[in-house]
Every structure is written in C-alpha cells, then in structure tokens.
Image (cartoon, rainbow, N blue to C red; front, side, top):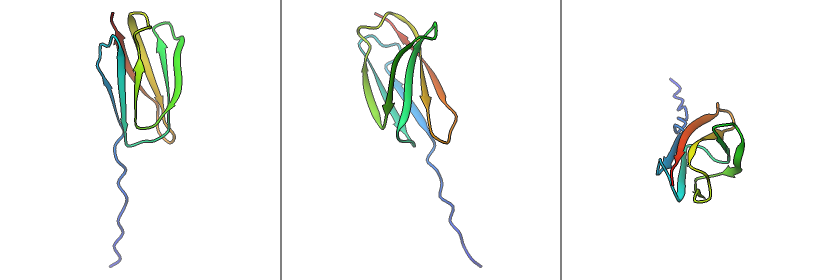
Length: 88
C-alpha cells in the first residue's frame, strides 16, 4: 500500500500584549509570514499600515486613549481582527 504524508499547516496565531496598552504594543505572529497589518481607530481612520513578519513592537505613547482595531490581512486566508485598548 502506498503511504502519503500530508503536510499539516501550523495554525495561525496572533498575540498582542499588553492590552490595554499605554506605551507600546508587542505583536507576535505564528504560522504565517509577510502579513499586512493596519490599525484603525473607532471611526475607521487608518492610524498605521505596514507589513509584518514574526513580531513587532509598536509605539503607542503618542496615540490618543481609546479603542483601536488591528486588522491582519494574510495571503490565502481570511483577515483576522483584534481589538486593542490604548489607555494613558
């Protein structure tokens, strides 16, 4: 009998700490590379837009206190959205 081994894709995980944040956000991605990430405020205005691979520290000290959303756009997968609170 022929045996085939199917490759198992590592599940995609997003870690954002600390939340709520005041000075910085640490974003860590597993299971995916080269992700487009954008941060939008509660009104939908884009605050930040960049490409991410692995992990990234984002300075939030100049951002206004409030609720923001991080949208991770990944190739061959649906987008992941996470809510972040900035509190000073």
